[in-house]
Each structure stands twice: as C-alpha cells, then as structure tokens.
Length: 399
Image 1 (cartoon, rainbow, N blue to C red):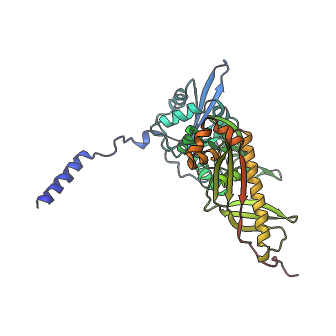
Image 2: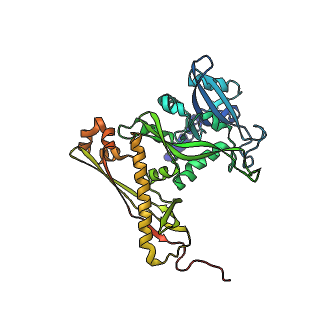
Image 3: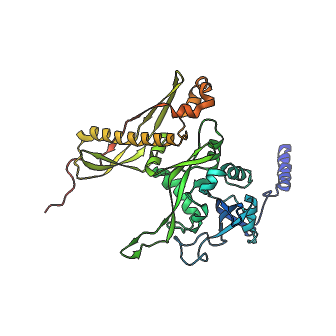
C-alpha cells in the first residue's frame, strides 16, 4: 500500500512539472525554410556582399500537385526570397523582414553553395550553419557552378516542391545510380576539419527542358539535376568530377548494397550494359621506405541488363566478367588520377594509413597530401556476373 502511495505521488508531481515542449512555437508564426543558398557578389559600388536565397514553405500548400507551374509563385508550395547584406545574418534579415513570420531552419533539406563561396568563403558558411541551433545536421550540402541563386529559378519536375526533389535526388537516386553522393552537413563538416581527408559535395545544376519537333516536352521549363561532385582541397573548391568519375569515386569509397549503377562495356566489338547491384571496396595502405603504397580491391556483382546482339551462354560468363572488371578498373584509375590532379585526397587513402598504422602516419603527418600524390596505387577489380539477362539464343520473332 505504501508503495502504491509513492507511485501516485510521483505521477502527480510529474504532471505538475512536465508542462510540454520547452520552446513551443505556433507553426503559423514560423517561416519554414526548406532550402537555403549562399552567394558572394560584388555590388555596383564595388563592395562585396552576401546574397542568401531561400525557399519558404507556404502554409497549407505542402500537399500540392506534382510538378511546377509557369504562372509565378501562386500555385507553388514554396515561395522564393532573396536578401543581401555585408554579413550572412544581415542578408537573411533582409528577406525575413519582408515576412511576417520567424525564420525556422529545422526543415532545411539542402544547403547550396555558390561557386565563389565554395572557393573563397567556405569556412564562414559552414561555421554559421553549425552555430544555428535549429539547423538540420542531416541537410544535404551541394555546390553549383556559378551562382546558387540560379537554382532557385527552377521548378519541380517529379515532386511537389524543389526542396523535396533535391532531397529525393540526393538521398535516393544519386546514391543508387552512383552519379552523385548524398553528403550531409555533419559529414561535410567532419571531413572539412579532418587532418587526413578532404571533403566533397554533390554538384547541382539547372537544366533546360529539351524541345522536340518544335514543341516543348511536358514539364517545367527549368528544373534541377544532382549529378557529379565538387572536389575540395582543405577549405577551397578546386575542381569537379563528372558522372562517370563520380561512379568511380563511389566504387572506391562506398559499400553498395542496393545499387542501380549502369556500366556500359564493350567486348569483341559488341556492347552490353552491366548493372552493379552490390559492391564492396577494400583499401590497404602501407608505407615502405617513406613511399605510400595503396592496394584497392573492388568486388562488384550484378547482372547484364542489355546487350548488342550478343548470345551469352554460361560458358561466356568468365570472359564477360573479365571485360567488366577491366572497364571498372579503368574508370576507377581515371578517377584516382583526376583527383590527384586537383591535389586533393578526398578518397580516404591517407585516412586509411592513419587508421591502419599510427606509427607510419606520424612519419607522413606533416606532408600527408604530398605523400598521397606520390603514392603507388594498384587497383584490382573482381566482377561477378550473377545473371546474364538471357542465356543461349537471343529472343526473336519467327517470320
């Protein structure tokens, strides 16, 4: 009985002290920011300024129809606001003061860096974002050739909003296809501050709707595509990887479990397509006489999805696997050389040496980047074809 009395008293006390969310705010008072972009521009008077662009969610319109509209911002679930100022805070205030609501950053899916910002002011932006109490650490970091503000002129093509489309492309399509990499703010910051690895960020660009037979295809006139990577050296953007080079990057750095990565391969003058569904890289770093030696082993597995009039029998699988392995090996080596051309180690080779041998790492710690650039790199690919798509004779209609 005494025990029940103590429990009853505890419940009563908890009801008194638990008054709800400590920072509760009515959603109707918030300007919910879904995407934020940063640019550095030079004003007419020659003074450098920050320009911050943002998508703000319109209350009650998050569930609108799929696709964009050419009739301005009325039918969209998000509105576009832009501001300028000598500091980032002033630029945000410049557009927020035109809104009756309080800025709220917790729903920001994406952070877009203009090219000049990524080259000159990266630390300023990343420091600002990490100081925001409400900033989402899982927001995707993207970089654009040119100005970030240009992306905000696009319209959604396959989602209800641009912010949702960017999130889906970064989180789902880009990673699965291997053509980009969903880099979150927390991971980007970790690589930026790392003593043995350089960061990367997905490249985003605006694309135009193609025209066919004089008529525009269905869809918005301007939309977005997340494809490729921006390569950084320390805190500066130094170069880019195209879609194929980015596939090489992902094969080197990621364990693929449910992939949909297409690799076109040619054998005996005929072409076919190998679809990578799974892939596992293994990197071994060893220091010999102050020379870094890197051994990369990649084991992709998948199936043949398309071939060019080639009859693939079970006895042909070995030769097909060899052709696929050679193609992937060449792609990966090209990616490595491209990255080294930018004098960046975003592939994690120096990081692997640091993890595997602290003794060897101490020898090259002060000049790890130069050590990576001069390293001997060997790539071995062992592809496994689990399904050739069709065995024996090709499918034909009788005449």
